[in-house]
Length: 273
Image (tube, rainbow, N blue to C red; front, top):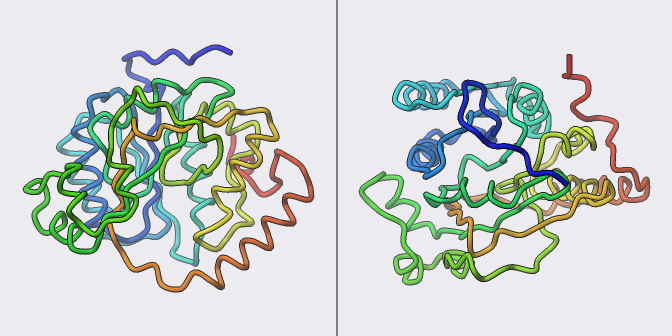
């Protein structure tokens, strides 16, 4: 297996894809963390599962201030169609390597560099995140760059999964399952081989990313966890009841499992030239 060559040129070989709904205040903080990344040779694609003008304004402001190539894709706000807009983002991307994050997750300054360090054809790198509490999230939103995230600040908060704030790259995680849409990186070739994201998953919280892991493994792709190396911080927001959406997605997922097929039928191929 050969590692994709990552070099500086006018056509980025790395595409960072952010899935967004309608929290422009969250997105502003995420974009600020992207602007501070130690690795800056990539294109940025914001995949918005809605058409809220406030989000567009934040993206326009960012694109005027940064030197990164920025693309903004939108679609009508018609239920949970995250996989649909992500598939379109993949087809619009120029990168040989794709890195996916969510629009409510702030990145450590070395996040992108760390994720890219281990990805290659046949290897998908996935990450973990700290679940910031409501108070700390409010402070970040009100103060912006005035509040810096640190392990000590998180330790004395009521945040969950505080252990994910520890950065110790020499400590290798043996975790080989648990891919989530907020943090994973793979070659574009590996994602195209399974026809991208399955658009049959039209409910949040379960399935839309778990199914990607299932099919990647069926296709022979190995998963590697970036825990304690690539840090991410999830901003608090009320997710409401998950029970109904979870049950619907779980039933779809079980039917997909029975097919034992790495290639989904309702994927990205319909958007390819």
